[in-house]
Length: 166
Image 1 (tube, rainbow, N blue to C red):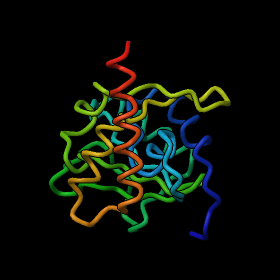
Image 2: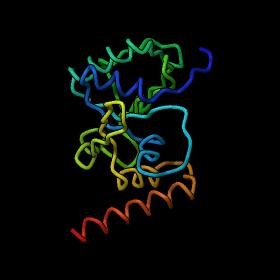
Image 3: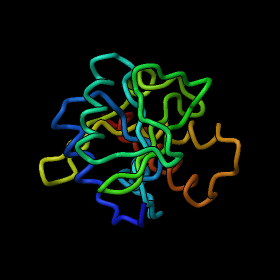
Image 4: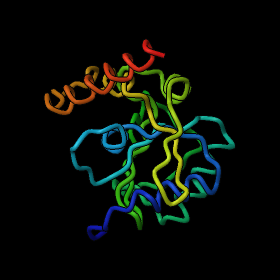
């Protein structure tokens, strides 16, 4: 596939339209919380509920999502041990389905602390908390960008202070 312009609104709008369960993670989630990094795709931790996965498949079909490895996209038999990340290209850019993000137990673990963030254009996705984003970055095998990690730690500290002051 040729390089596609990244349009996170189109992806999030489609996922919301079919009412699939997911939490936004990765670079986009960090940007939403205040990081100034750039990203070319959307990472999400999906609900592994069969109906939610069916709806995710519908959304990905509407976005013309195709696996980058050329394999057929089958969301019916996902196994985080066998395939922890499924990378896709779509009409709206890169999408990564991360079944069990590093340092977490997946969607159910993340959704507890996630917040629905108003991003404009009627889009309000569930976004991983700053604490969970830090936890994921620290658990990754590769070294995270120290500036991004420090930014997320500061956001986390700021949120904790707001909570204490209430």
